[in-house]
Length: 270
Image (tube, rainbow, N blue to C red; front, top):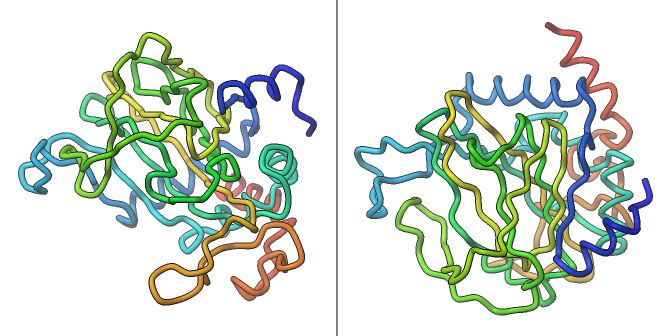
């Protein structure tokens, strides 16, 4: 799907843009069905703390499920979705890999946000514009339930990060002036795309209903760090390019092209 002139312009100027209704109703239903299974099976954990970095007496909840591709054939198939491939290719070039996938769930009233940060503070890619996050609203995402907040036009800057004491592993940065911040509200199925250098956060969920966001991160292949620790990156999924086998190398089965089948299995099983 070709990006519009407005989407391209916003991405170039601000580092992000949103596409409403990127996934249809049945696709959202399938992703929610997997989320419910993840919850039933206890596949995630609360990463929020009581504010001092400790994990005792936690009443705030930021429920993280990571990674996803080892838990769900639907999530394995999502990066190969033709619309996803098209948008990522237009933003960062080709070929590219799936770098990370995860879900953050904020329960009603007790759902804690994820503090201000840039993804490249974790990834440390030489050029953060060669990586891109795709954040999918699994429920309607609003200001009151803590949707994504973005800082436009500053992705070329360096930001100092420190330990986020409200999380058991996250880091955070200070934002001096939030007057230009954009809260990106989306209906379920909408997708927000942003490069690795864009400051962003989510806020607390003050409503009575839970709100979840599904995030995939992609990186242009020629910017993948050669080594992590003492070995090569064997956990990366080559979505496009000469190293892509449609999932055969990574999963031992053909995954590319199975998205619609996976959606149908989950939505027809009810």
